[in-house]
Length: 312
Image 1 (spheres, rainbow, N blue to C red):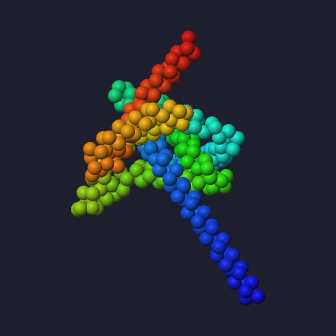
Image 2: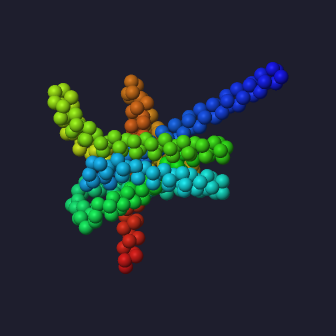
Image 3: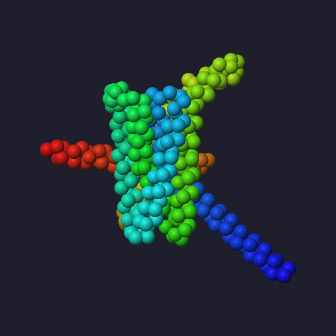
């Protein structure tokens, strides 16, 4: 009996070790996939705060919660099973879909660059909002944020799936679930911190002394922080979108542009041996971003041409 019990305990310990190793593998693959989607995560966190402009302080966190819940439902109920089904039924379509998402990111990034340079009169959205009651405005903003999020979430899930195509079905499902939960918590946790930072600053400023000075500094810094986040998000869209397209073209046999960028970045990095890794990444990201900007320009012209044809 004692021998049987010891054998059973050994089996349980072995199963526990396998389970722990599997969890470690899921966590490692999720972290790796999440790092590849970092640019989109940054953009998602940078874009969301604009949907909260004009609301009272007590409604900000509930609105963030609604958007986060909508984002999580999109990922878990629609995007995750859709990605798994697509990988099973038509795995050849993953790269083209990734590239289509890359074109969208480039288009969005170019639009932001264009807006930044042209600086159009920013009043149309606020004028449209004047006629809405607070509940209607909140519902409209939440729906708009979730619509924007589903595009970025789809790209995150596609990038994640592309990084685990050689794994088993259950490993793919586990990694996609981990990424969906982790990135949603990361993005909307960051958004909540960003939008409440000025309130924290105001409360600190009331205390006076060194603490008050810190609070006033936070309040003064927040507009610049939001502008910086928007700029980083814009650059991230171009860099990620351009990189996805370059890698996709390489997968279809057009590896010249990607290889040229890698070789040029390596040559530049060789001149700065102290920080060669960072310099190589920076040059690669910059050139991928310029490529993405060019693609975004062409995509914008194609969209306008299509709209003109429809109207004509």
